Each structure stands twice: as structure tokens, then as C-alpha cells.
Image (tube, rainbow, N blue to C red; front, side):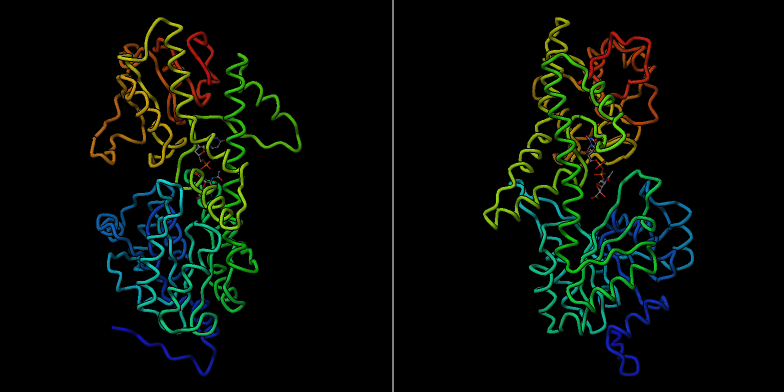
Length: 448
Ligand code: SAJ
């Protein structure tokens, strides 16, 4: 049943909505209860809002409604408390979107095989919102996509409601800044950039986020907010590519790249540490540079530096395979039919996410060359690949280690006893310098 809320005492829609926001009577809907949406929903509920998480996954929805957590970055007790208090519920029903005064879009924004932005989820949920849009509503987009997506793609969809942005409804882009596994910076203490389509949109959106998040950073447009986000991650991607390129040069020169980076990092100014690895994974760093270069090409501007950096990162799994092939060859063993124990499938330390993981790409490349690969990952007991293949993590036993032709480290989880690994392995190819503290058995260790 649609609740048409009259404007309060002739107040503008913006003023009336801000009143409800400050009073915490504004009803909040978070569409997408993933690693972005769920922490935000819990934080909003803890701040006193009544929040509904809308997600297409019925299992997630059932778990949430039972107060059962599925994300390491969300505190179990926090979730249980807000659910018990009725401040957070979950649903798969998109029709519920019509009930919310504030709708926050935290939907997936992948890229296509050709590295073009895939905006299907934004368009789908935008249309679902538009068909239920009422005056006095705030819509914010948090998902990262190409600069311009809010005003060029989402706004026209919402405008099909016949309502006027900045007067009847309010639209802003506010990039998520979630660092999975980071216990220090969480939703409420990570500065929040907000860009409104109009001044009223910025005012309403800043008021909303300001009820939950310590520092709000208002900017003059959604494009500034969108570009700042993509820049942040592209900054990381290009610096990671630089150290990955250094790793390849040091490999040719027979120099330990980790020692080089340790030395360079002693510079107390003008230096920021990044580390080489098997490539870049996660939902952001592998993708975000392509949003930027895709947009730039629309201005006939080719961001060659950024494109090259993204390609260097993408190519790292092949470098790892080649390095492993040489490591085995030096010991008289071909890669074909070699037994490889790969430690770490997650895309980075101490997370359980293997989507877009370079470690999985490495595993596939090794199997393509006929190697027999088992994996161990304490955070991924089993995983089903897109082709349906089910894999299980093997126990890290002395036997599992010693029977491997080579142990390949692709994720440096903190919980693993690297001394134990080296002690029982025949040879270790370490792509993360996870074994940097290991003293005994250094002769077994090969670093990228
Ligand atoms: N990586 C390296 N070398 C490095 C740093 C990272 O190879 O020196 C790899 C990681 O192993 C991983 C990938 O790059 O595979 C991405 O790592 P990340 O540390 O950027 O972590 P994400 O993608 O989970 O989270 C990042 C956020 N992380 C940090 O700022 C530390 C941040 O960039 C964004 O807030 C977030 O993506 C996002 O959601 O946009």
C-alpha cells in the first residue's frame, strides 16, 4: 500500500525530508546487502533509522532476518542487536522500495569481457525505483561506475516518474569506501564524499549521511564524487602495477625486489609502499581503471598510462606461471604433472572472497599446463566455480606440504604458520613475501 506523505506544513519536500531524517523517522532502504550495503545498513540501523535491506538472494535475506551475519566486516553482535530491535529487516521484495524515504543503491557494477562498464543492475534497480518514486524521496548511488553515470544514466531513468529532481525528489552519488578486512576504518569513521545533482540534493544527502558518518565531504557535483572514487582506486592500481613491473625487472636482474622496496620505503617523505603480487583482485581495483579509460575514450582521450598499468596487473598471473616453470625447471622438474600446493585463493590477505582473485587465475593457468594443483585457504573451505566445479581446501599437513613438488603462496593470510610451511616443503615460490620472517630453510624459498 503506497503511503503518500503530505508535505509537512507547506515545507518544501527537502525541508520535510530533512526533518524526518534528523528525527530518524525517515525509512531507509538499502538495495544490495553485499560487502558495501550490509555494513552501511547496520550502521544506519545503529544510528537509529529503521532500515530494510533489499537483496535478490533469499538465503542472505533469511540469514539477516534471523540476525545471522555472513560478512566478516560486520560485527555479529551489532547485526543481532539491530535485528532484534526491529531496526533492520531484509526482503527480496523489490516492491518494498516504494515504502522508503531514502533508497541507497549498493548494487554490483562489473565490467563486461571487453572491459566496458556493465550498468545492468543500476538500470534495473533505477527502473524499479522510478516506477515507485514519490515526492519527498532521496536516492543515493554508492556503487562505483564510470564518471557521469548518475546524471547521464540514472537520472533520466528516475525522471520517467515525471517528478523533478531537486524539487520533488533528490539524487546524489556517494562512493563507498569499504576496505574489506580493515578493522580500523569502518563505515562510520571513513570520510564520506557526497555529490548532489542540485544544491538541494546535496543538502538532503549530506544531512542523511551526516546522521551516521563522522565526516561528510560535500562536492559540487556527482561527477566530482564519481571521479574522486575512480581516481582513488586507479591511484592504487597504477602504483601496484609499478611495483609489479619492478618485480619483473628485478627477476631479470637477479635482484630481490622486496629488498629494493624495503630500502625505498625508508624514505620518510614522498614515498608510499605498495607490494608486488600475483595480480590484483577484488571488486574494485581490477575494474575501476577501466571505468576511467572507458569514459576518457569518449573524449578521444586515451589514458595510455592508466591502460598500461591495468594491463600489467592483469598479466601478473602469467608471470607467476612462468616463474614457477623456471623454478621447477632449475630443479629438473617440468610443470606438467607437477604436484602444486597453492596456498591462498582469496584475492587478498585475511578475506574469504575469491571473486576476481588473481590466485584463481594462476591456478587455472597451472592446470592448463598439466600441473596437478591442490589449494589450501583457511578462509575458503570450499568453493564452486562458475563452471560448477567444486573445489575443497586441503589440510595443511606435513604430508600435504612434503608431497608437493612446489608450494606456491598466492595469498599471505595472517593465520598461516609460514615457518611450518617452509619446514615441511621441498621448495616454496612466494608471490607475497609471506615468508619474510622465516629464517630456517631460506634456501627453499623463491620470491617473485
Ligand atoms: N594489492 C597488491 N599490492 C598492494 C596492494 C594491493 O597486489 O600493494 C592487491 C591485493 O592483493 C588485492 C588488490 O590489489 O588483490 C586490491 O587490494 P586493496 O588493498 O585495494 O583492497 P580492496 O580492493 O579490497 O579494497 C579497496 C580499498 N582498499 C584500500 O584502500 C587499502 C579501497 O581501495 C577501496 O575503498 C575499495 O577497494 C573499494 O571498494 O573501492
